[in-house]
Length: 240
Image (cartoon, rainbow, N blue to C red; front, top):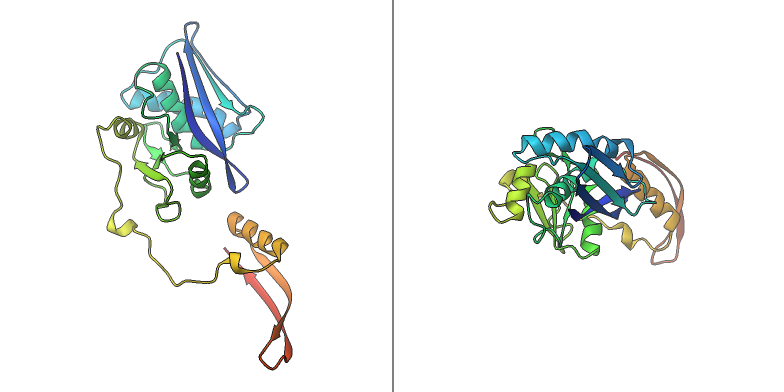
């Protein structure tokens, strides 16, 4: 049987859509993963097998072929663990695919079936919303993104078993606790308000995304009401 599940992978700081295609057929037992996966993605085969069995499901016997499309895009990170598990369960007939067609799945899975947080989740969720998905399933251990991406429902789940139960309406997703609610700090000017200077803004965004230090050297020309000009030499070291 065949199944197709939507997911995303990081490319820089942006998300790229990945279609996880799963085919389960008769033959000698084999688990084959194609589609230019990185080492962390190739290792998902062992995590997925143990997680499915330890979550109370049956790992199908026979030949399992998983294609990560598009084939020319390198897939990085463990966020594809959950969609691979969901695809195998759909292809083997253990769950239905009706509710998963408009959803995306993101999450690293542990051997006991619990879901672990992933890096770059905000960029992946934003891309999922832009691609028209109504829901995205993600680990409850990830930070809260409800206010940052209002166009999509972020479904927070604890494990593979919990994800399947929520998908079929047998359980509720993890709600926000009082301690998890985002704290609103002071409002600062946005980088979008800076006119021009696209090279400097790009450098700042890259430094912030990668957690790098940034050293700025230069001067700013300031004009007051009397058209008097003064130069301000600034040297700042920003650590993110």
